[in-house]
Length: 148
Image 1: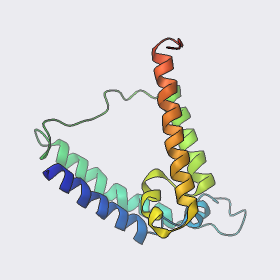
Image 2 (image 1 turned 90 degrees about the horizontal axis):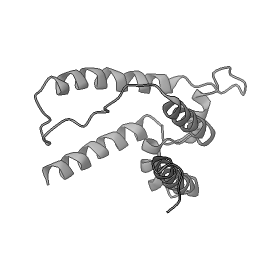
Image 3 (image 1 turned 90 degrees about the vertical axis):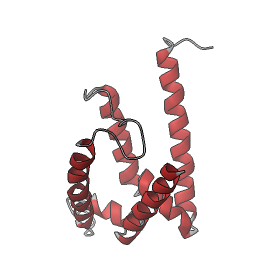
Image 4 (image 1 turned 60 degrees about the horizontal axis):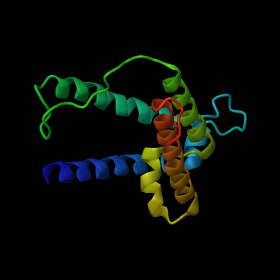
């Protein structure tokens, strides 16, 4: 129960931060990616949001990983590899292209769902379809490409 409450409170904090920073507005995100100012709307403020996130995350990880174990779990759940492979590069590219084209990222679209607009709903549905396709592709690859 404590983990659920902590997760809820952390989610609320994240959603408030994303909302206050304007990251639920896809135009703000897309204008950040207009780095060559092709449309005259370059907005560097997303870099400040990223810098603030790193300023909290880096010392937070150092503090948390300095403990023997997490407060609300038996162990840390960290990636077991740091290899940069084709899957990671392809996934990052697809994520970046989707973020740049739509202006939404998975974290920022959740609070945007409360705006009552269709775009975040369509993005979320497309995201879920993409996740399902990726899992199916991974299962197929793990089975050697055989179908059941």
